Length: 320
Image (cartoon, rainbow, N blue to C red):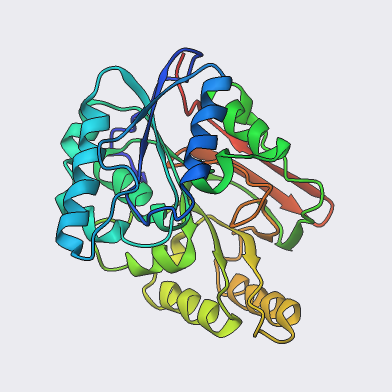
């Protein structure tokens, strides 16, 4: 059975009064006022915030910057008072530190980890190496300084209530399209397509066999998305998936006839999957204001037909 030999670790649910640690494993934020607003937002919601020692600090020498990132990541997971670790933002740089992370430390101290975009590299590596279910969702300096009500509901719901993610609804203005009908259960693996595809051939990409794959990207023209998807297929990875969920592929201004090209491309790759594998587009996930929080590594259910959509978690992703 897929993942049968991996011990899956579930973090504890957040409770008011818990300490949330902020780290910056990818790029820095050029607007420090957003960090302050995010801290205020978290505190107003009843949480205490610990900012990491090197938060938002960067140097021209990547060796120094990587040392800062690793220090803060390890410090937050080692700190017994910290219940959750939220990333500052995406950007670039997280892939550089994957080979120096102490995954044993993370496994010994399982706690909530949240981030998406470039944080996809950290998210997938942490699940692959430690078995810790973590969350691809909003970050301090990109959403949490002023989250939309949809983003806010999903975020706190999935992190605080073990029963909440049994049914995850899409944002009402994000139409869902069924490319292939089907009903499957599998471990949810995915994130930003550019980052995920860069992990192919490394020991940091979890097995996609038996998984439900979700993905998105931003400002990438259709030909580059096509190249990345073909890379995953040529590597023999996607046909092993039980289902495929395309999120929001934010528009590249130079990409003419984008909607038509993307629709045809997604249909093309759907037809190359196993005949019983459902494929859908329109998931409320990506570089968007209304952002769904997704549990990476959790067993999920997907049912999709032209007239029906249901998506949710088949097991708890946080414990009481």
